[in-house]
Length: 270
Image 1 (cartoon, one colour):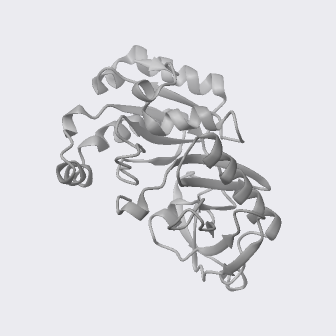
Image 2 (cartoon, helix red, strand yellow):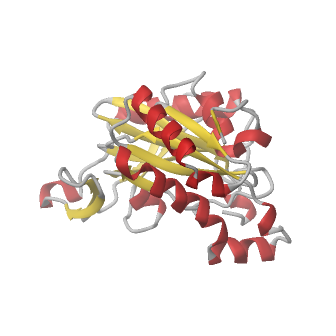
């Protein structure tokens, strides 16, 4: 087991590799990456102690634990949303959360995806990202092009944690931004009845009804929309992504980039 091994795609997987690159470009929540020769290494008490010490060094009191598989977020296969993510993890829960992420290699969705694309599921290697949990006021995704190279930037936004949007459980706002001058050419405000947020007591995610006056409220102001668009375009150009799929969040008034990948949805692989 290694903590923050050499940041190459082979060592840490596509998602973690992009995070290392992203933190040179924009604000990324602090994180560390754990790589394993064998998933069973998580049961070694010495390794568990090292992980707990790393959380202490980083001063992480609440974490998001995410996958970074060897096959994930590659140009050929995305595996988007198929591996386990555990949110609101406290330090005493970190080992069990890592076990959940490692074990998600063998879930049925991954098995079906591998079978359809002739991928050997047993050869998937999983690194694990441990990241400071962002308590998102507003979050969403940004696609830096639509279906052709002249297409505009598309931004989806929702109140609360972005997992509600990714899972399809809420209707987000949609903002369309011109790639050349960053003018907002269209906006559609989504009706959002529920918000995914963190419990103040247990720090676990839960859905809560929004007050009536916020259900039809616009999620981002124009300055924030342009901020997301500009940052996402920098990511697309700096990381040489044909189309960047960027997950972002505002904690209070600060914009954080959670991850970025090549968007393959236009090729029916999302």
